[in-house]
Length: 178
Image: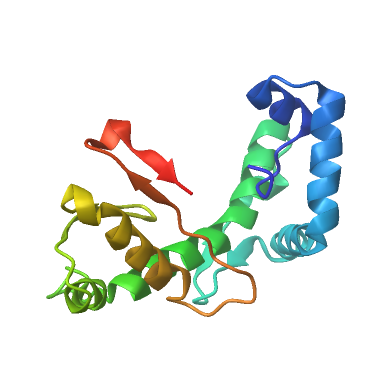
C-alpha cells in the first residue's frame, strides 16, 4: 500500500499503531526508495498535462477523473495513474514466466524445469499475479523454490522482483515460507 499512496492515517488504522509511528515508517520507507515519489509525481503530472497515462507497452488509459473537483474521485484517479503501469509489468512478468501462448497455456518452461529436477507438480491455475500448483507434500518446498526463482528472473528489471512461496493443504490454509 505504501507505493500506492498509503497515508499515515491509513497505515495507523491498518497496523493498530499511532499516526506518528505510521508517519515515521512512511518517511523512512520513502527515504529508502526516493524513486517512488519521483515516479509518482511524474506520472500524475503527465496525466494532468495529457489526460491519460501510458503503460510500458504503450497502451493509453484516459484518466478524466484526474481533473475532478471531487477529492475522492481525483485521489482514486491518481492512484490508478501510479498503479496501471506497475500492474502491467506484473501481468507481463507472470505471462513471461509462464510462457503463455493461446494454444498452450500450461507453463511449459516452469513444468519442464520441474520435470528436469525430478519434481512432480501440477499447475492448477493463475490468479492475478499468483500461480497455484499441486505437489506431493515432500516436494512442495522444492517446487515452490523452483517456481520462485523462475518468477523472480522472468523479466529483467532495475529493481528486484520478489516472489513469495506459500504452502498448505487448501487455498485458505496457505502459510508463507521464509
